[in-house]
Length: 289
Ligand SMILES: Nc1nc2c(ncn2[C@@H]2O[C@H](COP(=O)(O)OP(=O)(O)OP(=O)(O)O)[C@@H](O)[C@H]2O)c(=O)[nH]1
Ligand SMILES: [Mg+2]
Ligand SMILES: [Zn+2]
Image (cartoon, rainbow, N blue to C red; front, side):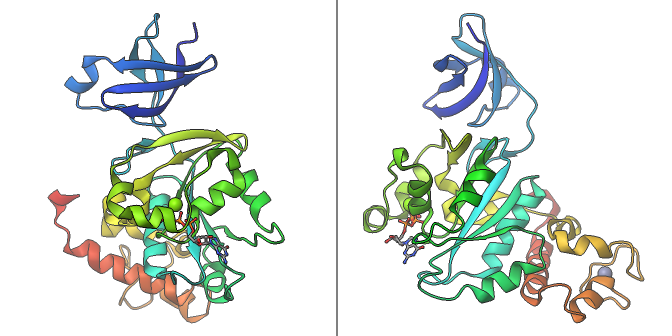
């Protein structure tokens, strides 16, 4: 039998590993617990010869604790123009968390039929982060999302009501995700307790990760203040050009990042998020990382 695959789901000590031959139910060897490693959805694994146990976890590209998922390639951050109105700070925290973890963030804008998306697209135009505008009546943007999913492990995140399930249903109707009032009635508590599950769709894989819906980027990952600048890819061209080495790009004289901001090469809302996140990161003590 095939003994390599990836964990599609873990539940109550059992793991469901998808191999070329289908889904295999198995347990993890005790060695992982001794080493304090827990296998998570998305992990590529090697099974014992009889397929009853996970023998080995192959090296990870990245891993998240909450939600527990490994090897993400793309994080689709869904934001609606209205209902609810997005917070650029939250969107920037999410894009930064993705970049920091080696995941490609992609901003997907919904409800452009209800209100103009200009301020959102403008904020990200200079960010190097891909932005996809969706229009369900014309189908605009859907094919772009499908192409990005192909060959990749992806997850969706975004506030309740932005239209994640609606998008998943448009991409993969066979998943039949609950939308609108039904999922809202169930409340938030239920979202957070559900397991991560990975589905094969559009020639790629989508991790349904309720944890990302909490939008608490601090829980997803904490970025030390010195590392934060690297989570804003549009700052990159200016590194090494500031007057002082170790410039934090806040108040220092001769800061090349701030000069770029003044010249309109960096978005003011993105820069403001950087300052806010830097301030927050400064409050965190070393041992809390
Ligand atoms: N007009 C319009 N309505 C949309 C669009 N996308 C989603 N909606 C509506 O917005 C509501 C919420 O959509 P959902 O897909 O349930 O939102 P969700 O992100 O899955 O929300 P949670 O499951 O609570 O996290 C539904 O009534 C959808 O029909 C859009 O592009 N335009
Ligand atoms: Mg939903
Ligand atoms: Zn600087």
